[in-house]
Image (cartoon, rainbow, N blue to C red; front, side, top):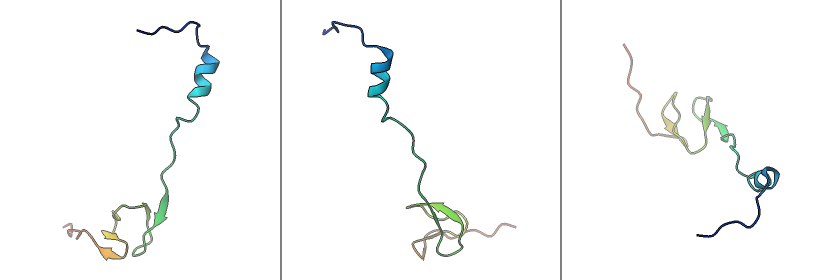
Length: 61
């Protein structure tokens, strides 16, 4: 197995890893009810996706 000839410093190692980071999801407003949803997801409030009914919500009693 290969072994490094020199120790890689913490600074050099961390500089290499700087591009690994979490990003916030892109949010949009539902065209039907106006609630905030993630892109490419069915609205949890009304069940619509891109202006069409995708999931029928059951009436809670």
